[in-house]
Length: 106
Figure 1 (spheres, one colour):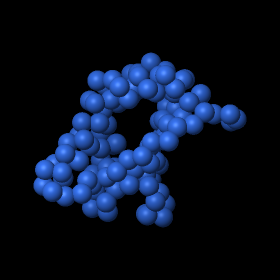
Figure 2 (cartoon, helix red, strand yellow):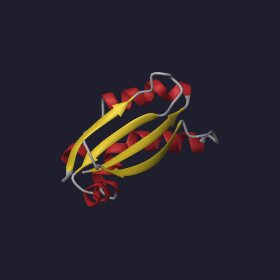
Figure 3 (cartoon, rainbow, N blue to C red):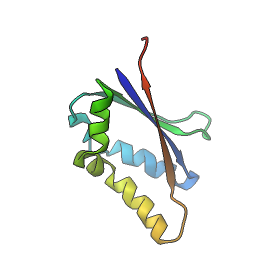
Figure 4 (cartoon, helix red, strand yellow):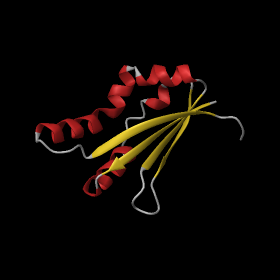
């Protein structure tokens, strides 16, 4: 099993929007071959990153997702928020960093 974790730092004023984006997500990832499941974790300390943890049958399945039209469709609202901030000369409301892992025990 392959795991991808997206560490997302949100500006304070964007956190509710981030929650709303996931509450109303397009569910495009759910249709992808090799997708197993996903968890979205909110920090209990209110300061740490949000985590989006996705589980895949293989690294190749994950890479296919990140290069797919479904990925673009699934992220278009968040991408639009970032683009809007850039056009207004502002910092993006959120930043993202991916790390990937192989499951060695469960």
